[in-house]
Length: 336
Ligand SMILES: Cc1cc2nc3c(=O)[nH]c(=O)nc-3n(C[C@H](O)[C@H](O)[C@H](O)COP(=O)(O)O)c2cc1C
Image 1: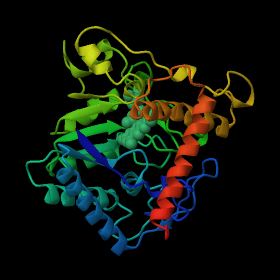
Image 2: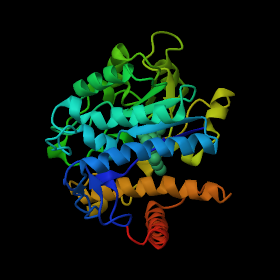
Image 3: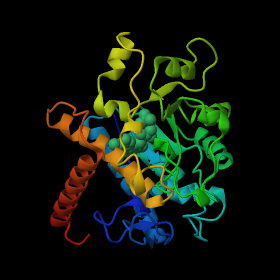
């Protein structure tokens, strides 16, 4: 059981904080849900590095068996890597070496704090899929720098809130870098990228995103031939069938349904995910995400999964629960 450490950065929604922090003051323009972030000072950056290290120590003391630094999906660490969101001109921005400094410093500090015998992983974007963002070529260079750190596992993902390819969704078309055609036809959409990362990486590689079948997973792992990764990551399947890996390993099942095509607010009209209106596409993606969260809430409460729950109902339930959590946070930390 490894814990993931992340800082929301510019992707922290308004109901969490009206004063997000980021490498630079570049706002996330999505449904008006994100305030303009304030650029961190160097002292604050150094403090955050230590906070990652402290959190890693707490993780170890709490009994987790490993820790992961979240350097993907556009959150704080990932936003340092991207030239679109990191416009700094000091030692933390500009060249790739400078943009990668925050990630590498966090990894070093975490390792220092947890000791040599505790697994440390990094989650990294294979590509931001955003024009001018963190590119695949840059990812390959960062992986080579990570080779020199003591990393036990590298998890490959991709995209940000602007281009959330991690859930197979495309954001604003004018911002988008298309995924490779060969990737589109594969079940796990970052596998092609993992293959080139594997050529330069010295640590074990994990790929998350899209795996639904035994065949897809075995091919990726190279059970009957050359594979592209060492570990499979599953997310959405576990939200509604947490025993899916056990059933797969026991050969009781061969695959799990991909539910996303059914989790739509509407099939037709302005709320259809095929609508060219970006907020409609975003709302649909958010509703599907909420559906998975609601199943997790149900499981946590000891209730069975509700496969028939409507995405609109899930969306409302999720927003209410987030607002409640944000209210509780504000009561505990009134200055935020
Ligand atoms: C409800 C939900 C919550 C998620 N939370 C996280 C998270 O906290 N950290 C993370 O790295 N990815 C998170 N993800 C993204 C998944 O790790 C994964 O990249 C994505 O869902 C694609 O994998 P899948 O096709 O197996 O679902 C989340 C996904 C879902 C659906």
